[in-house]
Image (cartoon, rainbow, N blue to C red; front, side, top):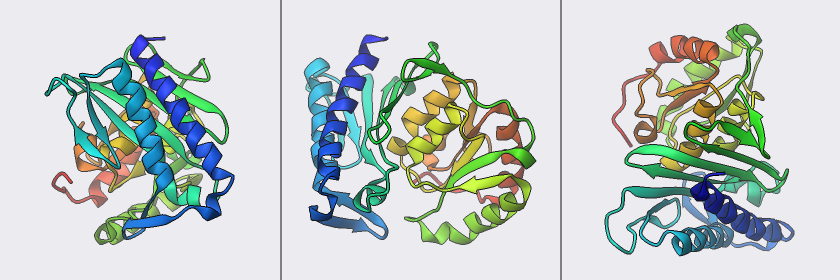
Length: 269
């Protein structure tokens, strides 16, 4: 395992311990609404602090981009390395006791994602990837599915719960893919949905209105598992636009054919 990946795994497990302990008494947690349908708890903050502490102890000069604390530079100012962190992806699931949430950590070096960790504490599933070294689930190599027809594909998605102005645009895609696929699934934690594409559990995935910390780690997992990742027009700016399609190569191409014509070109978030 790459040394930087090993540190990220350690950080993810530290955060997961905090999350799992809190899950025993989740009804007692105070919940704050950041904006419409977007919640945060003290667990999000504590998990994020734990991740940052582990990462900065090992790499004090690296920059941080995290969901709750935003962007911070390393101790030496500007850095070629940035850790992209979602300490608890699926907070709404977590506060309802719905067991679909994860810690997501990615490392970006000179604008290229090089390391990825997604850890699901409820199932003890650890997804990892280093660029050029493949993708793994609990140290077992994973690959995207081999299905070639959209009609028999299982596709993941996420509703545009923050950006309701895009709801009609999304519903047109949802309607079209409902009749063209074997099924659509919306579990509520984008990082895990994308990891499931890498593991072949889903054949493809699309969502809009995401942040970079929702996608960065999962995108590398899919690529290292033999899949493709792009925005709604097949371009590589999904981390900026917040619009992502991923899947095995055949399903990715067919999703683009359906979603592309239904999507408006939108400026970065």
